[in-house]
Image 1 (spheres, rainbow, N blue to C red):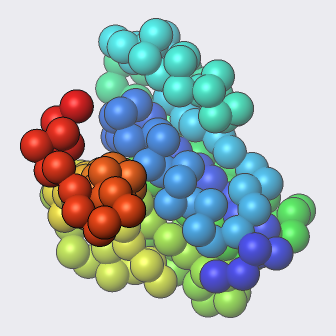
Image 2: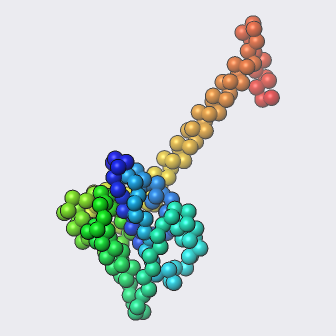
Image 3: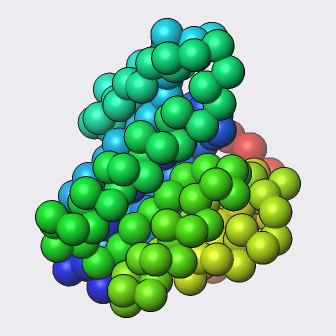
Length: 188
Protein backbone atom coordinates (compact mmCIF):
# COMPACT_ATOMS: atom_id res chain seq x y z
CA UNK A 1 0.00 0.00 0.00
CA UNK A 2 1.10 3.55 -0.56
CA UNK A 3 2.31 5.90 2.16
CA UNK A 4 -0.24 8.53 1.17
CA UNK A 5 -3.13 6.25 2.21
CA UNK A 6 -5.02 7.56 5.21
CA UNK A 7 -5.68 4.83 7.75
CA UNK A 8 -8.29 4.59 10.51
CA UNK A 9 -7.61 2.08 13.27
CA UNK A 10 -10.38 0.73 15.53
CA UNK A 11 -9.35 -1.64 18.35
CA UNK A 12 -11.88 -3.69 20.32
CA UNK A 13 -10.03 -3.99 23.66
CA UNK A 14 -12.78 -6.24 25.01
CA UNK A 15 -11.55 -8.78 22.46
CA UNK A 16 -7.83 -8.12 21.99
CA UNK A 17 -5.01 -8.30 24.52
CA UNK A 18 -2.80 -5.30 25.24
CA UNK A 19 0.23 -7.43 24.33
CA UNK A 20 -0.64 -7.09 20.62
CA UNK A 21 -0.81 -3.27 20.52
CA UNK A 22 2.74 -2.69 19.29
CA UNK A 23 2.35 -5.32 16.58
CA UNK A 24 -0.99 -3.76 15.58
CA UNK A 25 0.62 -0.35 15.15
CA UNK A 26 3.61 -1.76 13.24
CA UNK A 27 1.40 -3.74 10.86
CA UNK A 28 -1.00 -0.81 10.38
CA UNK A 29 1.82 1.53 9.36
CA UNK A 30 2.52 -0.80 6.42
CA UNK A 31 -0.77 0.40 4.88
CA UNK A 32 -0.27 4.16 5.17
CA UNK A 33 -0.40 7.03 7.64
CA UNK A 34 -2.58 6.34 10.67
CA UNK A 35 -4.93 9.30 11.03
CA UNK A 36 -7.31 7.83 13.61
CA UNK A 37 -6.24 5.47 16.45
CA UNK A 38 -9.11 4.52 18.75
CA UNK A 39 -9.36 1.76 21.33
CA UNK A 40 -12.77 0.77 22.74
CA UNK A 41 -13.78 -0.88 26.01
CA UNK A 42 -15.78 -0.51 29.15
CA UNK A 43 -12.63 0.54 30.96
CA UNK A 44 -14.38 0.21 34.32
CA UNK A 45 -14.51 -3.57 33.74
CA UNK A 46 -11.06 -4.16 32.20
CA UNK A 47 -9.00 -6.10 34.74
CA UNK A 48 -5.55 -5.10 33.50
CA UNK A 49 -6.12 -1.35 32.99
CA UNK A 50 -2.49 -0.45 33.75
CA UNK A 51 -1.18 -2.62 30.91
CA UNK A 52 -3.59 -0.97 28.50
CA UNK A 53 -2.80 2.47 29.89
CA UNK A 54 0.89 1.96 29.17
CA UNK A 55 0.18 0.97 25.55
CA UNK A 56 -2.41 3.73 25.08
CA UNK A 57 0.10 6.38 26.18
CA UNK A 58 3.01 4.83 24.28
CA UNK A 59 1.16 4.81 20.94
CA UNK A 60 -1.12 7.85 21.45
CA UNK A 61 -4.31 5.84 21.15
CA UNK A 62 -7.62 7.53 21.93
CA UNK A 63 -9.44 5.46 24.57
CA UNK A 64 -13.19 5.33 23.98
CA UNK A 65 -15.35 4.51 27.00
CA UNK A 66 -18.71 2.84 26.74
CA UNK A 67 -20.33 1.94 30.06
CA UNK A 68 -22.57 -1.10 30.07
CA UNK A 69 -26.05 0.11 30.95
CA UNK A 70 -27.38 -3.33 31.83
CA UNK A 71 -25.86 -6.35 33.51
CA UNK A 72 -25.72 -8.26 30.20
CA UNK A 73 -24.75 -5.53 27.75
CA UNK A 74 -22.38 -7.82 25.83
CA UNK A 75 -22.23 -5.88 22.55
CA UNK A 76 -22.22 -2.31 23.89
CA UNK A 77 -18.58 -1.70 23.00
CA UNK A 78 -19.09 -3.27 19.55
CA UNK A 79 -22.01 -0.94 18.83
CA UNK A 80 -20.01 2.11 19.94
CA UNK A 81 -17.12 1.10 17.68
CA UNK A 82 -19.45 0.51 14.71
CA UNK A 83 -21.20 3.86 15.21
CA UNK A 84 -17.86 5.68 15.31
CA UNK A 85 -16.57 3.73 12.33
CA UNK A 86 -19.59 4.76 10.23
CA UNK A 87 -19.24 8.36 11.40
CA UNK A 88 -15.60 8.35 10.25
CA UNK A 89 -16.59 6.74 6.94
CA UNK A 90 -19.19 9.46 6.28
CA UNK A 91 -17.28 12.49 7.57
CA UNK A 92 -13.59 11.77 6.97
CA UNK A 93 -11.52 10.98 3.89
CA UNK A 94 -10.13 7.57 4.90
CA UNK A 95 -8.70 5.03 2.44
CA UNK A 96 -8.03 2.06 4.72
CA UNK A 97 -10.13 0.85 7.65
CA UNK A 98 -8.48 -1.52 10.12
CA UNK A 99 -10.66 -3.34 12.64
CA UNK A 100 -8.90 -5.24 15.39
CA UNK A 101 -11.07 -7.89 16.97
CA UNK A 102 -11.54 -11.63 16.94
CA UNK A 103 -15.29 -11.01 17.16
CA UNK A 104 -17.33 -11.61 14.01
CA UNK A 105 -19.91 -8.93 14.98
CA UNK A 106 -18.22 -6.52 12.55
CA UNK A 107 -18.85 -8.53 9.36
CA UNK A 108 -21.84 -6.46 8.19
CA UNK A 109 -20.13 -3.10 8.54
CA UNK A 110 -17.01 -4.44 6.82
CA UNK A 111 -19.11 -5.64 3.90
CA UNK A 112 -20.72 -2.18 3.67
CA UNK A 113 -17.33 -0.45 3.63
CA UNK A 114 -16.03 -2.78 0.93
CA UNK A 115 -19.17 -2.20 -1.17
CA UNK A 116 -18.18 1.47 -1.06
CA UNK A 117 -14.68 0.77 -2.33
CA UNK A 118 -12.85 1.01 1.01
CA UNK A 119 -9.91 -1.27 1.71
CA UNK A 120 -10.60 -3.22 4.92
CA UNK A 121 -8.02 -5.02 7.01
CA UNK A 122 -8.83 -7.22 9.94
CA UNK A 123 -6.50 -8.18 12.74
CA UNK A 124 -7.31 -10.73 15.37
CA UNK A 125 -6.35 -14.09 16.72
CA UNK A 126 -6.23 -17.24 14.63
CA UNK A 127 -9.28 -18.51 16.53
CA UNK A 128 -11.44 -16.02 14.56
CA UNK A 129 -14.11 -17.68 12.44
CA UNK A 130 -12.92 -18.23 8.86
CA UNK A 131 -16.03 -16.58 7.38
CA UNK A 132 -15.20 -13.45 9.39
CA UNK A 133 -11.59 -13.49 8.17
CA UNK A 134 -12.82 -13.81 4.58
CA UNK A 135 -14.90 -10.63 4.98
CA UNK A 136 -11.75 -8.50 4.89
CA UNK A 137 -9.52 -7.64 1.97
CA UNK A 138 -6.71 -8.88 4.21
CA UNK A 139 -6.71 -10.53 7.63
CA UNK A 140 -3.63 -10.58 9.87
CA UNK A 141 -3.41 -13.12 12.69
CA UNK A 142 -1.82 -11.38 15.65
CA UNK A 143 -0.95 -14.63 17.41
CA UNK A 144 0.70 -16.17 14.35
CA UNK A 145 3.84 -17.84 15.69
CA UNK A 146 5.49 -17.85 12.25
CA UNK A 147 5.43 -14.06 12.06
CA UNK A 148 7.14 -13.72 15.44
CA UNK A 149 9.59 -16.52 14.60
CA UNK A 150 10.51 -14.74 11.35
CA UNK A 151 11.33 -11.58 13.31
CA UNK A 152 13.44 -13.55 15.80
CA UNK A 153 15.23 -15.40 12.98
CA UNK A 154 15.96 -12.11 11.20
CA UNK A 155 17.41 -10.65 14.40
CA UNK A 156 19.54 -13.76 14.91
CA UNK A 157 20.68 -13.70 11.28
CA UNK A 158 21.66 -10.01 11.54
CA UNK A 159 23.53 -10.72 14.77
CA UNK A 160 25.47 -13.58 13.14
CA UNK A 161 26.33 -11.43 10.12
CA UNK A 162 27.70 -8.71 12.42
CA UNK A 163 29.69 -11.27 14.41
CA UNK A 164 31.14 -12.73 11.19
CA UNK A 165 32.24 -9.25 10.02
CA UNK A 166 33.82 -8.61 13.41
CA UNK A 167 35.70 -11.91 13.31
CA UNK A 168 36.94 -11.21 9.77
CA UNK A 169 38.23 -7.83 10.93
CA UNK A 170 40.10 -9.46 13.82
CA UNK A 171 41.68 -12.03 11.51
CA UNK A 172 42.77 -9.36 9.02
CA UNK A 173 44.39 -7.39 11.85
CA UNK A 174 46.35 -10.49 12.93
CA UNK A 175 47.97 -10.99 9.52
CA UNK A 176 51.51 -9.65 9.51
CA UNK A 177 53.63 -8.36 6.61
CA UNK A 178 54.69 -11.92 5.74
CA UNK A 179 51.01 -12.83 5.26
CA UNK A 180 51.09 -15.04 8.32
CA UNK A 181 48.88 -14.91 11.38
CA UNK A 182 48.97 -16.30 14.88
CA UNK A 183 45.36 -17.50 15.08
CA UNK A 184 45.85 -18.53 18.69
CA UNK A 185 45.55 -14.80 19.49
CA UNK A 186 41.96 -14.57 18.15
CA UNK A 187 40.50 -15.23 21.60
CA UNK A 188 42.38 -12.19 22.92
